[in-house]
Length: 404
Figure 1 (cartoon, rainbow, N blue to C red):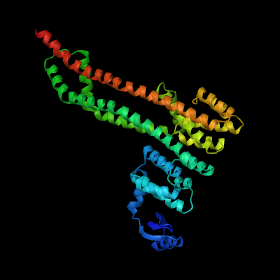
Figure 2: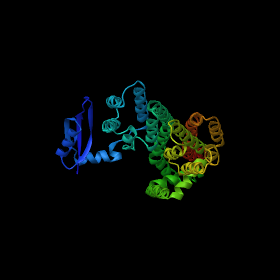
Figure 3: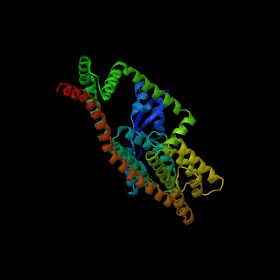
């Protein structure tokens, strides 16, 4: 069985292209002609191209920002009255990410072959997640695809903006860390060994900071490989341990309980859960199926178990608000707002309000943390460099005092 890439035009003159698995080229040609396609090219893929296309690392990736832009553009074109097939063809030409453009071409091909948009997207799980396709499927069934895609694009833009702020905030501290590491490396490699030999020849009793610094530098120069082996061993042990379900559950729960970072992580998870659940309910999905689908929004095992408990409580006849209030990581405020939504019949709107509230709190928390990170790094690195300079200068000052 081989893989063939084809390009053709349908009866309307629209370009259709994609991949077909067949034992020979003639089988592909006959199959396409039976569909009424006018063939432009049919080429067999070589083994290298198949490996590149099937390997997710070599194939490339589509980030959140690219997905957000595609979703927003598709929603805009559909609201303008453009047909889905034509809209996808237009976006194929406008998308700069070649991997996303290739996926959009395949979406167009599948839709031309009477597939729904959600079914076509499900074939690209690394680009369109299970939650994404579930929301699209619900929107197709309810007939409000454009509006739902608009909500999805806002959610993806929020995620992209949050990641961009975190990366931007880490640029300056990482730069400081790199420069300080270079300075310390130069001191420990070229400067301190010369002073060490000078102090040894002088038979002078060294101050404690100087002895600590000389001992540390000597250990690093002679046994640096031990640190490398230990670091690699710790990383390998940690990754292996995290594969155990009970270890992963404990670590994920601990990450949600951490002061500061744990609170931020929990609010991010809650915002994603509430926005996805609200979008699904607004699209006409049942409450049980919607809650089950939101499990795909998180990789945190402890939070996912909370979602499973909520689903189980609803299956047993409980309300969403009561089920949420009984979970440790979901918060009382969210439960109260959800209860208001259930009482007034505006649950989807209240869930989106909860998501907006936690998004704003997360943005404020991230701004506060990032504004403190730079000064904190300066203080820590200043203390390290100050200790190195002090350890070098103290013996010199003592020698000068003795000579005087």
